[in-house]
Length: 391
Image 1 (cartoon, one colour):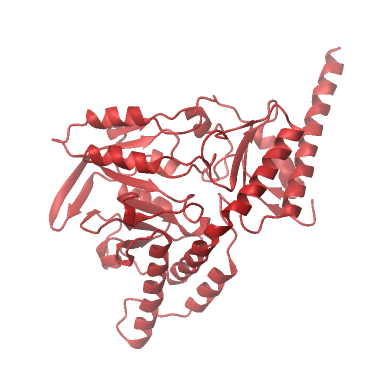
Image 2 (cartoon, helix red, strand yellow):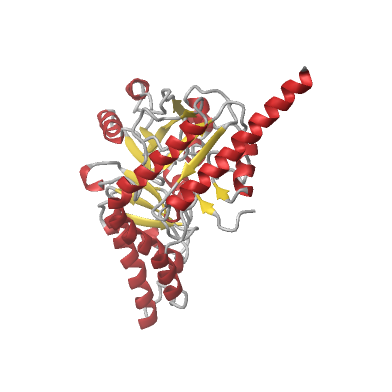
């Protein structure tokens, strides 16, 4: 086991930044934000300060931010047939998702499976916009509105979707657009004031905040989904339960840092390119998925023929390098990537994801080189031994 480890799995969870840790510690002794006394009002200020910071990250209005326990809860809240506008009810009769979406979106939330339509993606992982437009054109709005949910950037490949064009298609069809911005937030600019989406899904721990807190960001609060959690009326009745104050405070601090950190993406992209150059040097037959498309600066997803992801991941870990075999959202299970299958690459188990951040530097990149060289050398040795045994 290496003495110093290299953490290259930021898409699973970015390391907690110092500012978020400090904000969380400061909030641990705060009172209940719903209390009307002096201590309660001080706690409420912490929540509202964080709400403003999260809103600023995506250029939204603070009053349109609803805190949740994470992105999965945000998705389950938004992906529902039952919505409300004032005291009236609005029905979403069908959900349209991408085949490459995150499982919390692909699962359809509170929609029955029969009311979920999956739209394919091309070899680069870009949603089939013609298929989406045709599906929405055929949607019968007499039964209810169409709800479209799609990721802004893929958690495995880093491929960025043409959200602006998707928004135009959805708007023309009279639909509602939910964008899973979990991986994109803090890595590409997002501007809700420019009509980017009707609703966003955010997660704190992807941007250096604590785990267990996320948010829904709405373009407007005129129409909102019926609450997933009912109770005391917190978050303007959109999400009941005493707020996770330390988590929310940490989220706000991470959001402040992420706004400033957007300027770091060019340097991060150069590190990503260095990593991909190493992959191509050591394994000329490797395939880097989505490389022809616009991608997040911090993500690369590659496969080397003959090398299985679970075997390579363990070898990297033993060499002191933390990376993943696709999404980390399946309780530690390693299996075929549904994203690669949707992209037409079959059920290969050989894909590895490297996702980096602001703290990634030359030492981590060299650790990756050494570990990859070891993985390839062992594979070559196994193949040679197999040939000799066959002879």
